[in-house]
Length: 225
Length: 225
Image 1 (cartoon, each protein chain N blue to C red):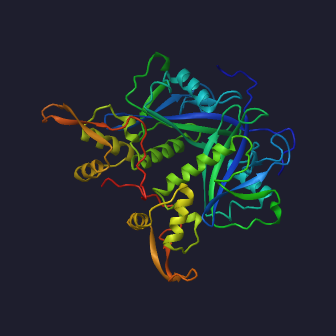
Image 2 (cartoon, rainbow over the protein chains, first blue to last red):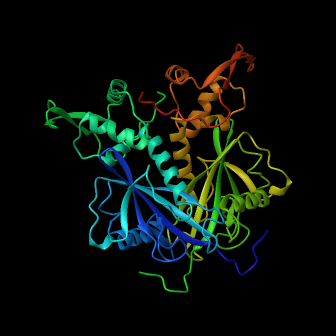
Image 3 (tube, rainbow over the protein chains, first blue to last red):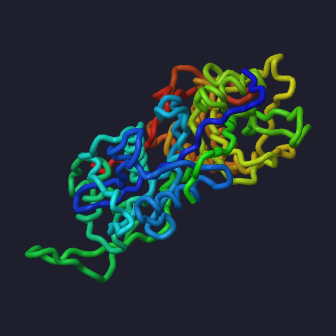
């Protein structure tokens, strides 16, 4: 079909999948809907993108207003995730959502966030729209990125023990890893270095603290020469 | 800002970056614009996405109409690339473009394609909109994918020599690779296997033909256990 005037675009929305690590759980930031559709249910923070704003501008404004989280300053890392466009995903009509995925070190939600909360990804409440599948997609993307980038650094403090590193991997991948193999394989990637500092957890002997070599996203691409 | 009614969405468009390999050159499919803006210049095949069609549905219809290429049947591989949303990228007004990247084995453009042509990525004509930077982004994405997936298979015949494989890598990466290192490193990935067949190119002795183990996209993720 050719579109003769008037051309009618779908609604454009933006949504954020913001992960943090809490203990040994991967958590995602949700907001409770205050109006229909899906009133009272939880959803990714997001909303309309009107003409004149880029997707990240619209999203930054909406997430700050709905949750108090500042995408510019509170995140270690954010990237465009995917554009979801199933025609029936919003009961009000065809809405295309440009989504972003971010990682943050532990965030304390402030007073502007009475309807926002982090939930463990393995114990999510009922979610509005197709947001459950968007979160699954984001977690899979993050798990894949952990195998060829230093993206896990976005979930950890600047200095961390190898146990904390492994816990972060396990939380994202949703399964336990063998400690000896994990350490051996991870250390051969040359992404991290030992610091002079140690960390003591209760009665255990002090553990060495490590840091990532690069604070920006690094891709472990294979070179062919 | 909260958007009070009436909410006005940006225009939604879709564009395709379709690569093929021609000799030792990576080429991209372009169409010549028949009307303003940018009349007579070349652009990625694309157009409007109206309410009621998903992005890939709209794109499939547009690319077939403008170039004769059928995204469903002519490509080895296609994926959503990125959503470009700079407010001023279209002189007619704010238009957000959801882009896709595909790879095809050599395509012969048919009669429905008098305004469509493949151009080598290193000798592109003047391009409309921000399409030059979209092509650069797509080529970088494809080059990155070649380091951790079997995506190069989309550009090659089902059986190929190691020289043809290396030529494909060089075309995407835009630089020459050392033959011995390339072969050694690639073969350790265990993505391909020898076939019983050989290929003879003029006076050279026959070269072994290889095939990919998997015909679907395979990701070489590092395992940590």
